[in-house]
Length: 619
Ligand SMILES: Cc1ncc(C[n+]2csc(CCOP(=O)(O)OP(=O)(O)O)c2C)c(N)n1
Image (cartoon, rainbow, N blue to C red; front, side, top):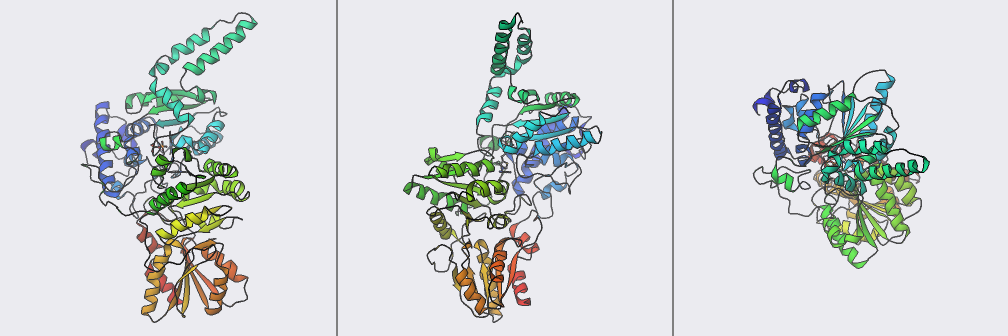
């Protein structure tokens, strides 16, 4: 650790420093972040871009009295280092260590918890309103990236805030990037402001001139008004925000601490209207490899600092790759197939599709709700949209799935990536609710593959069916199963092992754990039947009736919470049958699962194979 960083234990330690010292400190913080992320993995480029902005903000603000809400929260590393977590930062994303996102349990300086995008303006606005109602006096700022600004909630909050005659600050961190290049009209608008410095240089002059346009007689007045409006739209930067009721300040060089401080201090002093500060930063700043490829180094596994290469190179295909490859094949056969992503092209395996089928690929920005209804519209007109989305991010489009897709029985396929425990990103990212929030919706079919081939077949099947389908599959390496493969048939499960002493029905990824458990049981002289469910909905009712006649206890296993999940659906079915069989559901507790390695987390949930074996033996 560097000399100046050694002196920083809380934000107040920043306050007496000279700008020369702050420059050195910024470098030390960057080096520290690079070092830790190179060991633990994490969001690198986003954090390197906001070092100066965070220092400046903490020098003007007095947290925890003043509040900062970090949108997504993936860029909060400098904030963590400054606010008393310098030493523990080495445990970033490790089990029981520091989270990669703001967490109130870690620090009183973390004013609000985030992980999903576009929530900061709403949350900060709520806090500002609560402050006003309590008659208190402190500042509240939302720090939001230009990517997160593409999310619907951010627009809803901006619209509401404009109606708010109060002190409230939005800091727009504009680096032109979401994970990949940012998209959309607003992004183009920001880019125009950035690239034409004359606009802001002469902003004051332009405004003065506009205000001086003479008002002589009625017709001239009307013309002058029109001319003024026209010129303003043409020349004044940030006019969109000003029209929404914000005072717009910027654009400002986000790596110049002195300048940012000045503007934040000015914004803090404004009373009676919200302020939007437009800060321009470089994603990956200070580490040239990340500056060159900010999308690759947005979130990165442990890497070698010298050349940026990932330490554990995974040459094997992931489920996302299998999904992307299969979709390319199917798109070749059927020109109606189109792919949709909400700013997750690379993560969902759609990079090649985006290049090969440029006109049939849509990145809609961080806008899962819009993506879902957009798919419904595409389907209404005869296309076959596939929305590739992480399980955790589809959560916010629940009503769109119900109201726009399922109610109207649209041909939309949800390719649900990162289903189940994902690991180091923690609570906000675990995909452990999708079975529960989807399976009860009428018309939807839900599948879960145990391996690569099954995923391909399920995608093919889903795209041949009428009505909505969801396929859930986990993060990581796509497995090839050692068992012989029976062809996929709608609503039919697959019996992998036959035994007379008991039965386990498992969905998708959990089949591997189930095989381990069945082997352990065998060593105890108990021969279990193992069923690969394949379908979460519709259930294989015929098989379930047969199994309930043969076995006293039906064990179910799933990579989802027990509440409302796969086992729960079997329990509902069995409860309607004339049988004495009972169902024991093996899945995650009714709790949020923190960050850590997947296997560690399975252990804490009693979902490792030994624990499951013990649960079954106790029955
Ligand atoms: C609802 C939701 N969808 C997708 C994501 C995944 N995600 C995390 S960061 C990010 C890009 C954010 O871009 P921006 O706000 O510009 O921040 P930057 O990383 O560029 O600083 C995305 C898409 C998310 N966190 N939340």
